[in-house]
Amino acid sequence: MKQSLEKRACELAVYMIETGATVRAAARHFGISKSTVHKDLTQRLKQYNPGLYSQVREILEVNKRERHIRGGMATRRKYKGDSGM
Image (cartoon, rainbow, N blue to C red; front, side):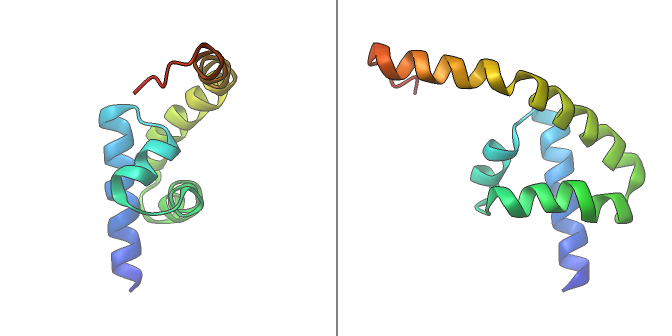
């Protein structure tokens, strides 16, 4: 079980580094919850692979700084009637 958690955390990290995906997008891609993705990347990965963790942390910080912009754009699309998909 522990090995699969470590493997999943590393796979999530590599996916986010390669694509620059958000936690929500990664969760959708892997079919798991946002909470699980966040816990894997912020807690488990820090123990298993500190080098990978530092790279993912940068992406998480960028996403955190930009989330208000994405939220505003989603609201704009909602009221314009454009689904954006």
